[in-house]
Length: 192
Image (cartoon, rainbow, N blue to C red; front, top):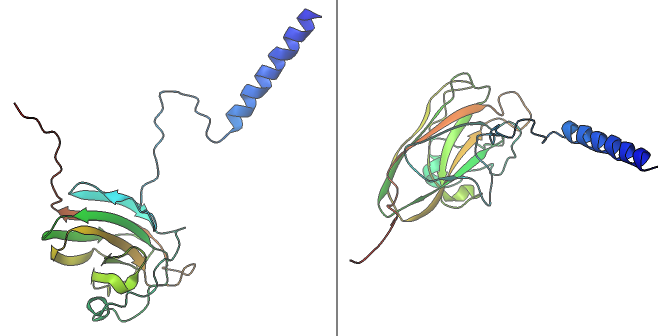
């Protein structure tokens, strides 16, 4: 009887191991590094740009449309039309009088994407700067002219699309590049 119980337990153990292997998160090699997909995020907590220069590749495909209109005068002067496509956001915290250079390489992208710098996550009325999006699908780069004299605080970089979500040109790949300087953080302090 003990031997039958041991065989039954062994079979259950093998079955449990096989079930684990069918799990999409099962790692056969414990030394394998699993990477997180690149790209932005959405409000209220998009990923942060914590050091400059910054570069990240991603896609707006599968994202939501969190901002349709960038209604601040500085952003409607050249772009007086809605952006109802999928968008990706990044947060960046700057010190007083910082300058930023923001661009996106869209070569080969299936989307007609543009860039926006806004002051409040998810609020297009807080738009501070934008690229002049007259290029079209898969062309670029999109570049926001140097933004300088920013007040200290957190700002948001949006990659957004001109076309309605779900239609041709509404989403695509991008490589976002941000240059400038960020505030210096105190690493250590001591008194001798």
